Image 1 (cartoon, rainbow, N blue to C red):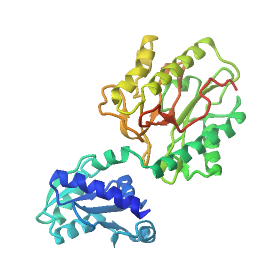
Image 2 (image 1 turned 135 degrees about the vertical axis):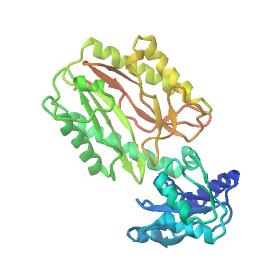
Image 3 (image 1 turned 60 degrees about the horizontal axis):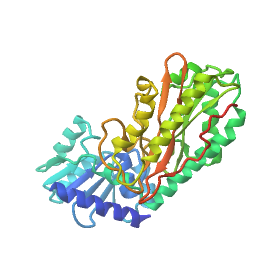
Length: 361
């Protein structure tokens, strides 16, 4: 919707003016999509600090999509988009050009500087990513649909999980089911980790077969209209041992503690600490070594990050994951993850709603 993207560009222009630059060159794909509506593997946006003269560049493969999705923007078609926009910036009299230094290689910047004759370049920082943290109603609806598809896929797959199925087969079944339900594709590479493999947080599925007595961790999500869901559930196959139930209950308690602190204005580090303290108090400080969660949206991992030492306040309409885990080497592990949205003046709202109790299949 052109009006939404125009409003986002207007907010971005305020940030450009604050740097003292005359314009910004936006080259990170998710940021270009956020500001224009165009999803492309080769697109960039020249955004002036003032006025309506934004210039979108892409190559001929995406010309039709750009005309459809960004009809309010001037479009140039070229294979070498950054050089084209740098030349155009010089032609327009830009004297200081902000650029996304975190995304641009040294080689690309050298090429940019060569074309931007007479222009000083200035790192823009993660300014657009910060804008993207707070989602508008349309974004939250897309994210909610992605999460609903994820929930529905799990409900379809759970009755089919049984001893003898391999990790890879289960991952493929989750991906296929999400597609049948309407997902564009998986939001990321699906993780299925059975038995001792569950001690590896980002284990890649193998031919290892599920067996009675295994804990099985499934970390997956659907992509819907560019927005990423992310959910993890750990289930037991056939039976559950006492130590398995103990760590499951501990992780569930830690997740509840993290969710309870997820309120408007809370410090990111405080959310992590609330969950981490529960796990550390149980003697498992060395068995939970990743951050508690992250933002989700046009990227699967985006700002804000919830982890030890992370700073910054969370505000309303910011979606994040809460995903504590306990991982016991050579035994297995448990992770429970949900996508929640911080709300103004109230409790966080969960977008993933699959049962969080330990299921014994």
